[in-house]
Structures are given as structure tokens and as C-alpha cells.
Image (cartoon, rainbow, N blue to C red; front, side, top):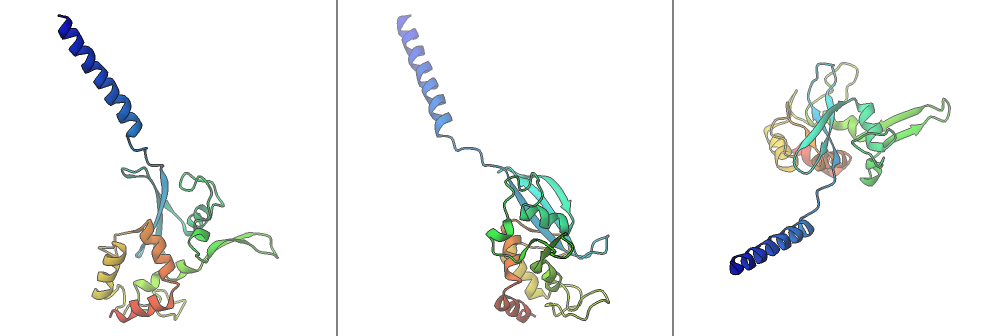
Length: 192
């Protein structure tokens, strides 16, 4: 009987040691972080872009919110508090993007700006799709990228379908950087 109790004690000690060691060695839970993205397609509100944000908890994307361009700029610049940027970091500044919120010296009103966002429509269209501008886009086709451009968007940004997919997280930030680069633009336009 003593032999049985001694074996049980050793087993219990081993289980306890394993439990303590595994709780110490286990990887810490990832810190939830905000994830931003954009889709470039005609929307029901007559806009060409839809902005979104999520919380990435390490397992899935949760708390999806559709944003206006203004909300996106204010959240990403850290001007407005949100669960998507709780530390109120200027995500544009961290990525050297020409975006943010400036104060008009005459009216003293805040004005949001983001130069790369003004070029996103060019990925998809050959000319500005509304009559208010004669500006040309980067696509050789009227309403969508060429087949080579679509393949490029898939390989570099994970976009399988330009009509439904969002440029998300690092792909989104990379795209905003790329559309400011004249060499990148020339390369994209050459994929006709």
C-alpha cells in the first residue's frame, strides 16, 4: 500500500510541476490591435472606396466597423479615441504617409487630408468615373484593372477580386505607400 501512495505522490508532483512549468513557458496572449483596410469598388453611397477597421485578437478579426474617409483619417492619426487605435498613435506618421489632420489658420477648423487616398480609384479605372474631372487612372480598361494588373494585386496585396476584397492591414499600408511612388505607378501602368 505504501508503494502505491509513493507512486501516486510522485505522479501528483510531476503533474503539478508540469502544470506550473507549462503556465510559465506558455506564450503570452497576443495584444489585440487595430487593423484597417479599404475596398476600391462602386458603393451604394456613390463613393468608390469603403474603409473598415477590425480588432485582431491573434485568432480572428472581430468588431468590424465600416468607416467614412474622415473617420478613418481621424482614427488612424490618433486624433479621435477608438478601440482600433487606443494608444492614439499617428499611424500615418509611423509609415511616412502624407495624411493627417491640420488646422486651417484662417478658420481654425480641423481639416483632414490624405493624399494617397485620392489616388486609390486610379488602380481600377482608366479615367475618373464621374464627370467632374478629366483625370486619368492607371488601368487600361474602363472599369477594372487589366488581367496582369489583377494578378499583380493578388500576388502583392492578396486581392483575389477587386469588387469584393479589401486591402487589409500591412497590404493596405503598403498600398498607401506604393501609390505615392512614381516608379511603382509606372510599373503598374505598364501591366496592360
